[in-house]
Length: 608
Image (cartoon, rainbow, N blue to C red; front, top):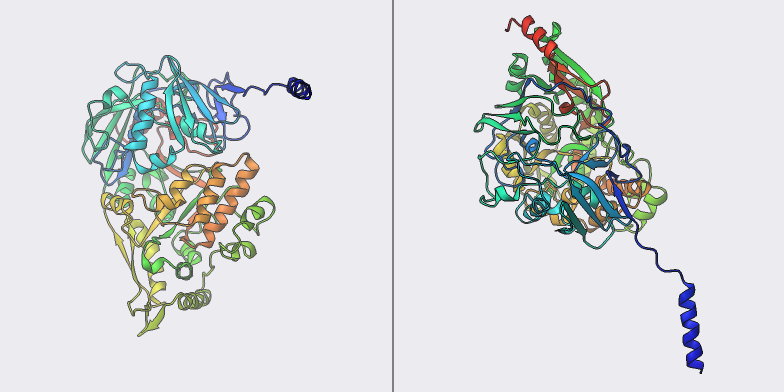
């Protein structure tokens, strides 16, 4: 009887408990990393795009070096400039939000609230350039081929996408690996979709100069291997009226001409050989545009403000090299770089010193750690330098001979602590070997920055040599980690996530072609990267990214360079531009050739 009553009581108790709520499925046109996307379901175009922008006109651009492949998705070869315009992704980013994406190949997005999977329904109108529809089979093929044969970046970036499967006529579902990673639906949306039927008879992991099949706004019209490539706008491009493409990709043709180096390219621009140039050399911006076309208004020279995170440009150590394994050695060498002198004498005061891997954003560490950031870092006390808790990172400041001498004295003390000694005015290691290394460059324009750094290193008894090589050799050496020091740029977004593994993880340090060029192999960094990826909200993302930033800075993996908060742009006066610029991108694809301006320019230049 007691058993019967107990069973009845248990059944009654179960009846009193409400059934578990079904997981809510979100169906949307767009998705934001945190919060809601800016643009609602009925939006017609991005605010910074002109939906009535005229189509047509020919645009000429420049590239440096050479190319030997039309496959940008593998490690081999040097892909042609602009080749990415042949392909589309499932979703497209907006340029005026931290991290939001909207349907491109995909018409709708479905996912549960916990973001443990995502499904995309493809647009019926999405077509390859041969007229065949883009299908779920293409999407599944793209994920599998990029994860198995693609560039190491894609293997790392899509690592947590466990599988893709077709679940409807036009629907493909991505399932994710266990763990918390709210970014994965957006990562899946960035998948470049490739034509399965075209690649079925071709070897994906080899270079090719066969014009590939795409679904994007442009296709290859003509090329001269290594020297030029011309793209033409697809007349019946399927996506021309969808919201994320309206008013964009307006030129009828785009031609890239290749030049030996930036100096030759600049002179070609002023001679009218191409139309648009984004300048990244401060000296050239200050002095090289004092030319008749600029003075006469034929070339427009403008600075366009932006709120884009600048990331970190720096002299980057290869910590795989024995000489750079000790962080005290790396810190010592940073004292030999005199940014203040360079900014005054080389850069015309245009730059600000970089102090964070996430500079020019709220993600940059500042002051001393507090709140959630401090709580995160406390777990690693004793595993990271104590200065992480007691000192705000600041690169050495010089600008005068006296200040530089003081910095070099600090450098000598650090080198001595790291086991280096001076013999016959040469810095040597414990085995008596001189301290020598090479600064590898891809462009001669940076030699004028590196050489003063070399002279200061000589005062420490260190022999550094600057070597500039052609772009293809440079790319190969970087992919193979065959260098001592390079000038590296770690670009960042307002919403860091999976890409941080490729920058900093221990696994990426041993993967040729990864972005972990400095060779960071630190279990603390590995854990912090995973915390950033798993951040549940914006506030946590900020705290976790600042903690990661602080630990990276304490490792002295780089000698920080500088940044600027404007796009420096010069262009021949034949373009129209939208009245409103996006916050975070330049969006040159939103510009168009203004026929009246182009005619007026030709008349003024004596062309018919």
